Length: 518
Image (cartoon, rainbow, N blue to C red; front, side):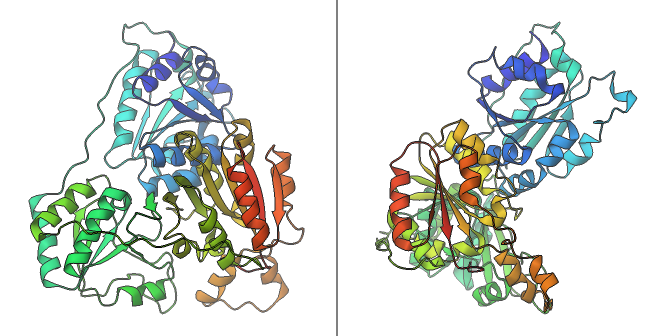
């Protein structure tokens, strides 16, 4: 057995059975080892940002890490943006980064780089394995580190000679135990109970606080004690739709979020961070909470939100309550707008769909319209680095146990990682992609005014328009093997969505919105 085979065997023995990769020369023995460990599924991405984003999406729906296979420092760098998003989502992930053979590094070959420097910005754990005999133990440590808690990125650098070299020891694999999520301390519970009883308090949910069991517990506290229940703006994974309690989402725009939170005398954080502005703006505070607001952290990401909320219910005497059920919107007709788009999605959504949202301004009405849609799970752009939606949809489909994935993607963001469509077709994944075509970086047109910049001429407008030349989104999808169609009315969108859900494999629907709308 060589080092690469030992690595794959150890990963597989610890429940890591998917590897998203974009390999190069230094990873060829890892690729060959896939034939010796057939239970490890290798998934090829044509760009490293697809690979890392897919591993993020996979981890969000399974709670388990996938491996990525990346080619030296440049490959790791190409995957950086979606590694940033994954770090902000607190998901487990294992990067395997191939490197030059140990004896070759001193020659400063063209692809030689400081892998550790690139890794350090996104990895919670980093190690460069030294010998084939070290690979199993290092891989097991990477799995342990990836689980945290909270989940994090573990990066293992594998020199080529550690990969191709044969083992001299008997240890071919190593096993680890998945850690348990800690419960909150008695002091944290007592502090939370105190402010809930004495102050005008909001509970802000994030991470596992937005899954069904925690949502139900939070609803009990809110209903019995007049506590406002809120959520982070961009959740890692949230259970939504009919049957799930829906907290108030903190508004993305800082000036509105300040007003939303202005009456809070205290907040209790459950898997969430203190809310701050996404950017700094002239004359708008970066800290969204009132200056005198007391902050109590009940659970941090990776700690058990359910245990914390159960303790609060016990202390406060919060009995179960029935959640009122509403109805999904009727299927819309007529013009395509951001509202009719959201209504069409909500009216047609199949139960148990995984919805990957990178709609940006085009999805303005999605969150509200989907409140009473069929039960589904929502994934969002946790780190703000665009180009996440299509890769995350790939990972969610592979990890989702056969559930349909709906990716709602703005045209500008789509162009960052368009290669994910090729992987969808290659793997025959049940993904419906809505490509929102407004021929503009509409979010940046909005931000132009919010930051106080003045744009009066053609030069500035040209930096934010996407219509010269105009993107042929359907043509781009079809060229990568994904059947595509263009819709220009709400009626056409409803029919196209229904057809896509009934059709195995990926489907691309270009949704033509008025220019700059959304």
